[in-house]
Image (cartoon, rainbow, N blue to C red; front, side, top):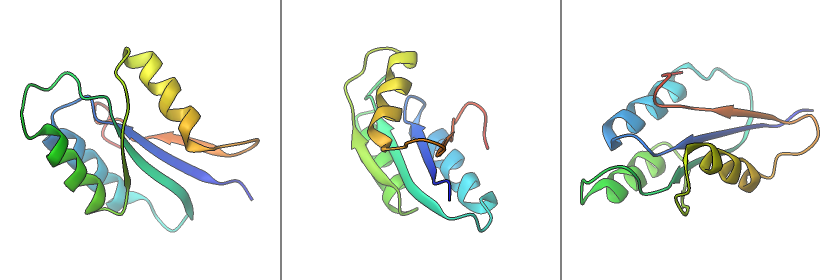
Length: 101
């Protein structure tokens, strides 16, 4: 069976990231999810509580929080996807705060 891996990059302000994760959780249905992670490149927020707020958003929804080095958006996506452990026919879903799932 294909595994579903869900990821979100925390490159938006924390409330927007939290809203995207909360909406995903509300709409996800019953399909089993192998892995859910919020990757934080620490950019572009100037909010000193940004990391703390992202950690809370992840943990309150049973997501893994992972701090990653910031490169650029495309490289951050590629790096985060490489950390998921998806293989073969697995599905990677990007819970993008800009898109609102």
